Amino acid sequence: MKTLKISEAVVRRLPLYLRYLNNLQIINVRTVSSQQLGEALDLNPAQIRKDLACFGEFGRKGIGYEVDYLIGKIKSILKLDQPINVVLIGAGHLGHAISNYTVYLKDNMKIVAILDNDPGKIGHITAGISIEPLDHLKEIVEARGIRVGIITVPAEAAQKVCDLLVDAGIHAILNFAPTNLRVPDDVRVHHTDFTMELHSLSYYL
Amino acid sequence: MKTLKISEAVVRRLPLYLRYLNNLQIINVRTVSSQQLGEALDLNPAQIRKDLACFGEFGRKGIGYEVDYLIGKIKSILKLDQPINVVLIGAGHLGHAISNYTVYLKDNMKIVAILDNDPGKIGHITAGISIEPLDHLKEIVEARGIRVGIITVPAEAAQKVCDLLVDAGIHAILNFAPTNLRVPDDVRVHHTDFTMELHSLSYYL
Image (cartoon, rainbow over all chains, first blue to last red; front, top):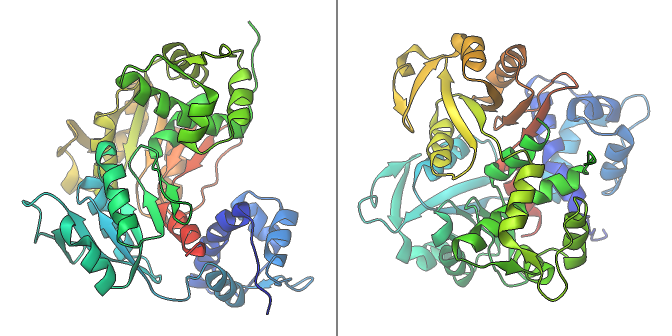
């Protein structure tokens, strides 16, 4: 088996395919064509065929892709076929919303710890999880095998929290704070800033 | 003055520049070079110069860009120099988080209405705004000159809410529900699905 290096653009599209395929699976659809995928996801079917061919899945002419098989394959590529423990830092409104939301996700990524530095919040239960003190981060990450961090603190605290995550051995961070983060080269940060989505949406008004 | 057609990629980067420039302005930095911008935003300085040249802003050699001027220019390109009223539909955890968050944004995009179809939520105050019934959407959009809609309802309700927004005359939608939406060609939808960010992050573990 060869190791594949997949482009960032493909890695960003795979979760989109996965989400749609999961929906098909729920309604018991067994096969799907690149044409159907393209229409549903507003992508070029040729692009989809090319993306999926990246990892040796070609589908069958006239039948298309087998939904179950493709889900398994994409999960394996994205390493979502194994449990991935996640820590969330910042138990404000956004932290609560995200924790509550992920509880309902049927996937292997699970928030297993919610941390905050406000003593008034410690011990409160969110999404079935008791909020713990931020200064226990390192022990918690180690004890629970946590590999991903989510930052939902205000912008001015984000870099400090990010440094703590890196120091605790986290290499993958999803940042909701509206600011850029400096990290070592071996740490990957993805940003989710909906105000930037709103701002770019405004252009099209 | 010529009308400019800016590529989608540039439109997506402009809010990133704007966010960083706003931070510079707060700490009274007057000028910035493409080099500094590139380092802070992890982008190629040549790309930044090219993006900014799109709208006739060239900066000055050895001095760089004037922060205030560039902020004004980008805001004007993104049409953020005018008030833009926003309606949010779905007063759950995520809706609350987003409403509370946007209150603190010093910008012209303002959530002026929060709607839900749960009678138990009507009249409750979130982020200083009283939650109103979803079936008043059309009148509210018209009366308050609302031009942007945010969808924070569950996936299974998102298409219906989207149709209502389109029917009410909204042409720009930010969708947080984890599902694709079908809209007419003259309606623009941006998606924010942090689970997809998490899933693509997983690949790099």
